[in-house]
Image (cartoon, rainbow, N blue to C red; front, side, top):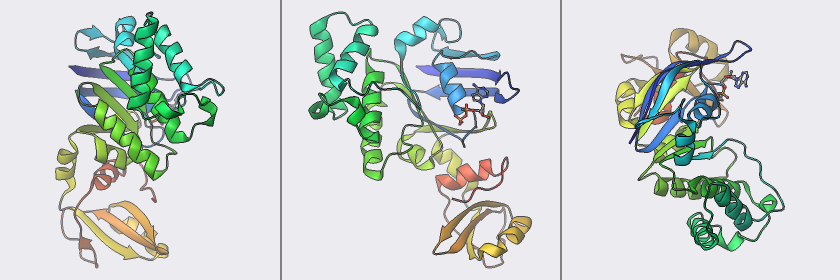
Length: 295
Ligand code: ADP
């Protein structure tokens, strides 16, 4: 199974070109779609999820023409949008039962069994009678995955799922996602590099609606390995360093700035060579499009 996106473009009525000739091949497993806010990730996710039209281009899920045969896609799709409304007073069990019914599972005992197994899977069984409004951010996201899994989808889309989760909630969510990623296509859209590093076997970096890189994280690393150098500087020196070097990221450490640059040769000037990580790959590509971001 494969999702193939070709030359997809979308310009909103206010003139923003959210997708600019996007072509991507997304195989089975976890696929990380990485990009800063405003890159076009949600637009792409919503278009794949058949909730929005594109201006040009095509999307195929095996034999299915996604942009034309929307119903066939919806039958195979699980979608966890960035913001999903929850009825605060309804409990998880009732809500899942309701969604399962809407997705066409008419048999009551079949539904009961399915809802119980989903609640077990996402570790919410003991909280199944609690109102959704009482759930923490992590519990809400796990509930979101449970509803997305109804109907055994072969394509699952999760849009910025870990934003706002604390580290232990994030970890639990990672474990859950990695379990479901084995037999399906899971597209994980995020601006958090660690999400992709932890979970994804394939990835793409997008910015201003364009694909800057696609491949495995390992292939991404090979592109910058040996070219990343680091130095601690004073904040006041940053502007000068930006002029003299290709600064890809800056991190505050105890009031000082740890600067990472990309250079084909040893830059001297007190810089030391450091092993590249996926953040370097990300910032290497993004910094060619936008100003380096202080993280
Ligand atoms: P991301 O999910 O990567 O943050 P989006 O797809 O939400 O990116 O947005 C891409 C660009 O399109 C942004 O510049 C955003 O402001 C713009 N945009 C998104 N939705 C709309 C809309 N409905 N109307 C106009 N512009 C939009």
